[in-house]
View 1 (cartoon, rainbow, N blue to C red):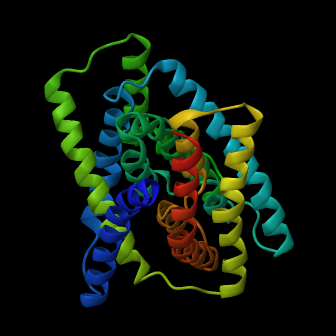
View 2: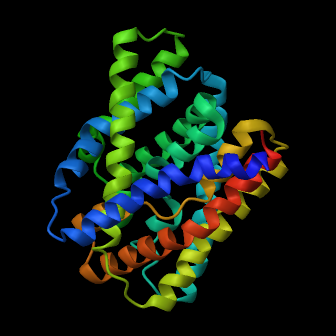
Length: 299
């Protein structure tokens, strides 16, 4: 009975806040979320990276280890994405991001926090920092089919990752004012972004439903299978293995749509939006199952 109560405690807050956003989006279709987007990209995400990596007791060794484990997972996601996109005769380059860049931040971080506490948040932050870095490097490269260092140079999250690694490497203790500030920004950002995800679900349209469903199943079902295989191959255990499994099970990140809309043709963006919507809806079923497995076997 305890594990079912714990599962409810982990899942309910996240889905409830997404539901608030969905309700607000339905009630006011013209509600402006540009503030949330700008705040999340320029202030919230850097704060999340720093707080989750530096203030949760995460060691540099664990950061490096799970950073690399998830990099391996992304390589596997890429292979799966290439196979599925080839089968469906879609653009293998521009439509690859939603396969390989899941929602490890907005949804993954709070779920891992509620499941495993601050330690889980630390490992989840290491994984999320990789995804954030890839959004503004690999994601932009795939969406535009060209690489630009200017995108990286203008990304506050990139500098937050560098600063966080330096704090870990030199074992610097963060001052309380910095911990308190980034903590407030972290929790505010998680709430706002989850709510904006709900709002986005009322706006993004689904095109070619069956193709979007096939792609989404690859994301939310094959994703955690890859995570489980990595856990078994490297003989991982404990809460960190549970976090890895949960983060591999996340749906496509909405940031894929925002990046794609800046660089890719409308038809490609529509396909990306479709996968984000369908994979997110499917995740309301798959995530509780994955979290249940994680809490039962990796704790």
